[in-house]
Length: 185
Image (tube, one colour):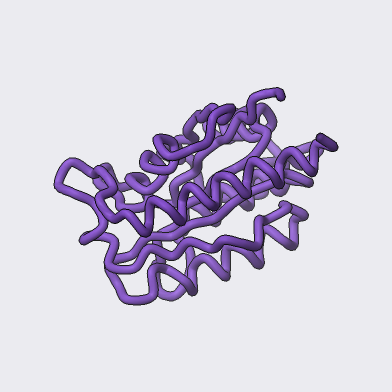
């Protein structure tokens, strides 16, 4: 079967982001046949229709190309004030306004990591609502909300929580199956 190219997108710009660490862990836990690349949202401008109408910024063009080249997306978001970070919202807004919208019909899985007790659940549900509206095929289950995430990773950013690792394996297996179903395999 053809490999599944997964583009990971972290909604956090922090170097030591728990969400970015979760994406790295997911890559290590993925089933055979998944290959990964990583979007970089640094330098992505706020969405501005005037910029869009004048000349699309290079960072947006690069992200658009990455999404188009991917078979599926794995998006991790922190929770900021009960929602997603502005940089992730800007990325979605830019992509949703590109020609032949690259997110349309793309399979995706979501996860969130937070030091709090809810694991970013509110942000993840906001993200799900936005993606469904623009016709991203968001995987329903398993959902991954990593609560007390600072206790689930060691000081080097390695996932050390067995139950979280198992949930990630299940989600990635489901994403592979979902992607192949949408491909017609």
